[in-house]
Image (cartoon, rainbow, N blue to C red; front, side, top):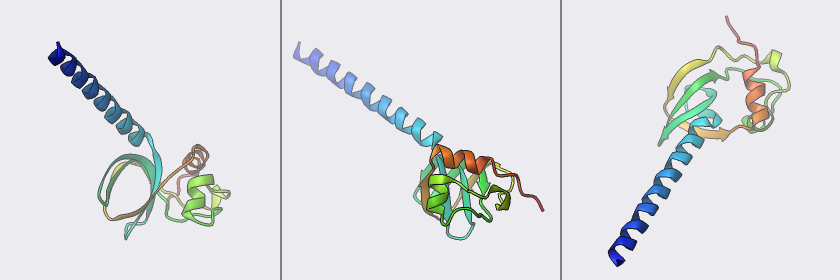
Length: 122
C-alpha cells in the first residue's frame, strides 16, 4: 500500500513538473521582446529560444533607426511616438542572433506600436 501511494505521488509530481515546463515554454515562445546584440544591432520579435547569448526570434524586425523613444527601455514600455520617422525594415521569418547583450520584454502597447511602423525600404 505504501508503495502504491509513493508511486502515485511520484506520478503526480512528474505530471505537474511537465505541465509547468510546457507552460513556461509556451510563455517564453510568445514573448515579444527587443534584443540588443553586440554588433548586429537591435531587433524586435517573438522569442523562440535562448541559450546563453544566442537568441532566436521569429517575425523579427531590425530596429535600424528609431525616433519617438528616448531609449530602448522606453521603446519596450511605450513603443514609438513618431512611427513615420522610424526605419524598421521588413520582418524576417526567423533570425538567430549571436552575442545578445540585452533582452527587454515589451508591453502589448509597445508591440503594436513597433509592428505598425511602416516597412522601410531603400
